[in-house]
Image (tube, rainbow, N blue to C red; front, side, top):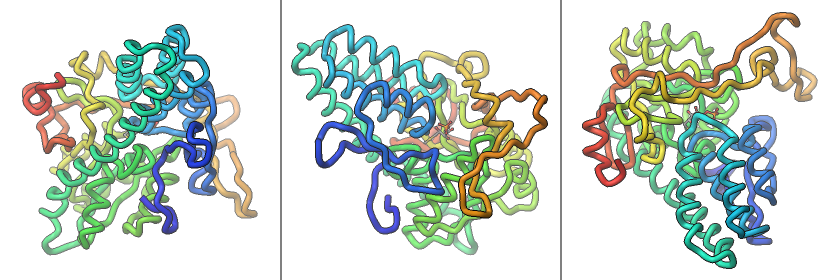
Length: 361
Ligand code: MRU
């Protein structure tokens, strides 16, 4: 997608040296577009952990390039195993991380040491290109859901967190159908939930949509249910970090409450995902998906632009009050209207998922 007229992906190999990896530091958005150069596997691991890059597909793509950087420095079996271990420990919930590392290891293990670095760059680039094609397909399959509601009025879509182009390599998952609807001239408006505590909605989704010219309004997380009761939401589309084989959906904390509100108000609740987000090894999301616990400071503080123009972090909780910060929740499959995948729309249950992805399950 474009930033001020210039096309970008969220991750790429440096055009000059052809080996280091460039990312947009998402902790600086929307205040600054800070392009960071990553030169070691450890710096990629840090970028994932500290959320300079985030969003399930981009975490996977970044880890793939982390392996490539590791192989460039040392292509031994021990270095490959170490890269998979270190990168795999960065964030627990998004299954795309494990998926990408397993794919890289399967590709590289049979090769001799000297061939590994070049092969790792090729495989990481393939993962990125496939992600872009996958998300375009998700967009195409999701577009009719929006078109169906567009005949007479503005279509109002509510989304939570950021599942846009910067959460993937390009296009996004939940936002891909929205971008395609906008580009097709459909009158569309997005309710963007702020997504406390890290504000991925307010800071990232609003920024992306604004740069592309998509009409949107930021609302507090607590306003989504009210908007649905008022009849101001036609459908909800969110992304996901892991879908179990029976269709349970892990996504950013607060997603479950929106699914409950959507069910109570008869609003369709759709989840957009690439097949790399399906965890075929587990069935029960509530017991088996690891939920990342992040630092309490993400809850006790907020960061933004102060009135004097500086970027400031302020405390919003009394200094002695403890805070807890579960970063994801699980929406049971029964609350999900359907899944938007690169192969088409799919019911959120094991039979439908196995039928659509029989070659992967
Ligand atoms: O903690 P984050 O910002 O990595 O969480 C991101 C989300 O929850 C997204 O909705 C999900 O990864 C899907 S991204 C296409």
